[in-house]
Length: 290
Image (cartoon, rainbow, N blue to C red; front, side, top):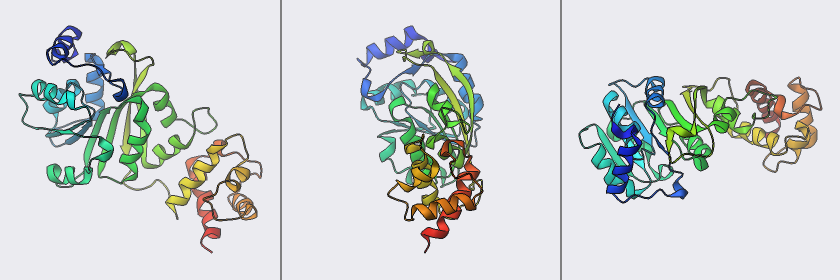
């Protein structure tokens, strides 16, 4: 690996460009060779791949992506990092740097231009404060993504992979598991970053499903039901759904749909699997279609 994982060298670069960390962007630069290798290996990057990197920072991970991928598109929100990236990645011709907020980027247009609209891979070290919105933006837009390999807060990784009946299980778990097959690769200590975050991190890989895992009549309804079930997770499913304004059916119809699905009247949403929620959603749809 290059010098970009050497704290002394990194500090010299930051001093040379008079760079100051900006708290609002949640900037923590990776400085550990072993974790860098874990990310590259788990992302399974080859010269046939186009990779979208979100939040390249000073280019530590970007440099390794450039060595292994055919094309890298790096989207960085902080304009103060652009001259640093242009300097640290000067030797690579397969890199495109975009100075923008990933939420505002037309990713379809970008990947059409650089990858002819073919499937691509995403690799990112995401700011912890905006992890979930970025992940859901990528998944809900049905972009042609093959996999997403992320550095996230450990707690968020545990929520994405959580099972029914556990404390971490919730709307994020179900959404991620609907769109992808998630796997936690490793846990990362705060010592692996500059500056050190206050929490542990995890590398997680999401293999994106080309099709939903089960047949869903109404996807929007499914996610309304999931959100309603966890808005007040201590309530029974029937009460939680009845109090949710976006479900266009009566409490009696909701109870009937729960019974049709084979669940107890006092069942709680936190005990249902993704398949259970889809079954319930398909049954509720028989009333909302009227």
